[in-house]
Amino acid sequence: MPVDDTPEATRLEQLWSGTFGDDYVERNLGAYDQREPFWTELHHTHGFTSALEIGCNVGGNLQWIAPHLAPGHCYGIDINAKAIAHLHQRLPGVNAVWSPGRELPFRDRWFDLVFTMGVLIHQPEATLPLVMAEMVRASRRWVLMGEYYAATTEEVPYRGVDGALFRRDYGAIFASLFPDHRLAERGFLGRDTGWDDITWWLFERG
Ligand SMILES: C[S@@+](CC[C@H](N)C(=O)[O-])C[C@H]1O[C@@H](n2cnc3c(N)ncnc32)[C@H](O)[C@@H]1O
Image (tube, rainbow, N blue to C red; front, side):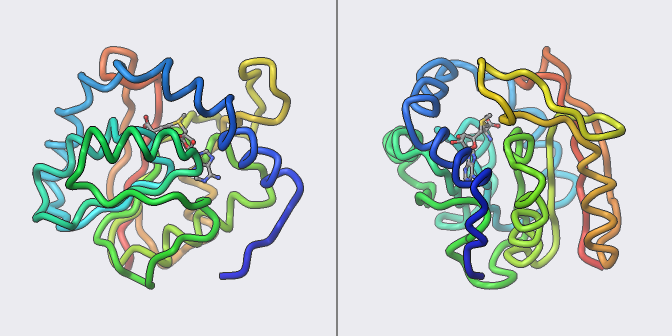
């Protein structure tokens, strides 16, 4: 898919590629220990055999998914090179590459599950549908989004940068764009889970 080079998407990609993103990596290196139960339960319930995370950072989710999958079936992409370097060191069995979420370097329907956790919140309006479309294209079955929820789109102040974080009804936006997918499950992950009050939606290709 050709890149729709909107200035807002480019600005946010540059933000996350640079020191802003590097600082996020350092700040959160120890933040992922509590996430194992969610991923084990999701895998137990839905039995996906391969997975791709968009915006995987250092692998705080993939570290809990990879043990459930056959070698070579766990993938991540991120726009921050430092995060990818950390991931390669921490999780040598995970395939992680640098890429923007709106132009995934994978074939159609290559993965059983494609997901984001706290990444669509950093997409501007113009490219949110593009990233969702890339998730749908790369997935043969499941699409999961774990993001900050609001009934109507609202910007949230984020570390002094304008237009960098949005609460939205991601489930409703996805359902309206991709009516051939059905909502299989929806849940909430509070602060005691290793996340930060996120709502998640799991869609299945119809
Ligand atoms: C808030 S962090 C979430 C990290 C991880 N998903 C988690 O659950 O801990 C957002 C991540 O998305 C990456 N990111 C932001 N915008 C991106 C984009 N347009 N394409 C790919 N990755 C992006 C950032 O570099 C960062 O690693």
